[in-house]
Image 1 (tube, helix red, strand yellow):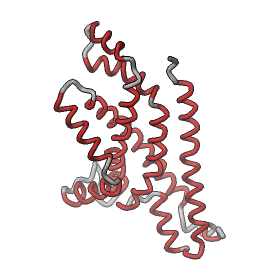
Image 2 (image 1 turned 120 degrees about the vertical axis):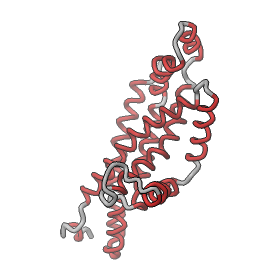
Image 3 (image 1 turned 135 degrees about the vertical axis):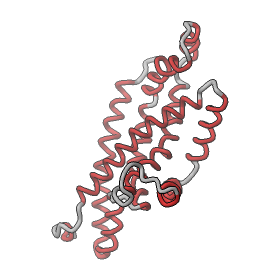
Image 4 (image 1 turned 30 degrees about the vertical axis):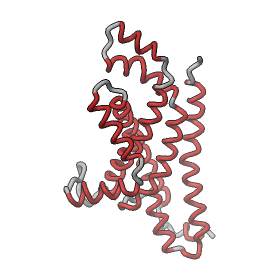
Amino acid sequence: MFDFLDSGQYDLLGAFWVTAQLALYSAVGSLVWGTALVAMRVSPVPLMRAFGTAYVNIVRNTPLTVVLVACLLGLNQTLLITLGGERSEGIGFRLAVLGLVAYTGTFVCEALRAGINTVPPGQAEAARALGLSFFQVLTVIVLPQAFRAAVTPLANVLIALTKNTTVAAAIGAADSAFLMKVMIENEADALFAVFAIFAFGFIVLTLPTGLILGWAAKRLAVKR
């Protein structure tokens, strides 16, 4: 059933390594962008609140495929933006990271906003009474507690992000989903084996993440 793997024609480890890198870079970028978005959403500046709210509501309700294709057609093919590299070398990977960050950051934002709601308002009021600025209150008092409370939701977002990397094949990223498409076309008589291989690969990628972050959530849980 798995005889086609013996030929060395398919680089499974390489494809899943690309998927792991795609998930890692996108996760880091999403945490940064999501934190910036949640800062906008709770900002005392009306314009920033309006931008953060509009961005989250629009992008979160847009299909990921549309976001990625928009990055390809709008940024690369129309504006000729290559994100710091040659147009033909790795552009699909870089655009996929950008699209995943833009999309997943909205879910990180909402997870952190829920975490902020668990912080007692009296703490922020006391900090403001001591003369701390909004930025100081947010970064020193509120966000550290919000991150602790949001570990479990963020773990779910990260697992969903890892699975969402399969959509990156739509814009030419040479990840595991792209290889699976090639293998399905070439190995039509072994579809079950192909699906089993890639299902197992994604379980290997996502299961440890869920277990580790679940353990971290219990360790970091705020005792009230």
